[in-house]
Amino acid sequence: FQAFPVLVGDMDNSGSLNAQVVHQLSARLRSKVAFQTQQSKFVNWQLDGEFRGSDFTAALTLGNPDILLGSGILVAHYLQSVTPSLALGGELVYHRRPGEEGAVLSLAGRYT
Image (cartoon, rainbow, N blue to C red):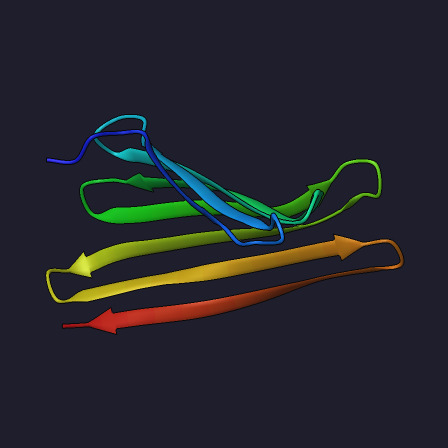
């Protein structure tokens, strides 16, 4: 048994902070927010969501989104059980910043 939400963080002598908040929203849905500061400036932050179905897992991550600059990273994962010992899936990574954008698609398999 684990209690939610879980808050974890550490701060160094200069005031830089690394922190995470993990929350189990339902039996199948988990979310996480992580951020990092250097002194008083936000350096990185990330939002994660994961859904676990009976025979699949789907996850979505949004990293360093900046609506004003139109930049950020979006990662989508999907893993589907095909048989009890074989799972197949993929990952799509999309990034954008001023003057540059791109996407990478990867396929994966797991045999146990």
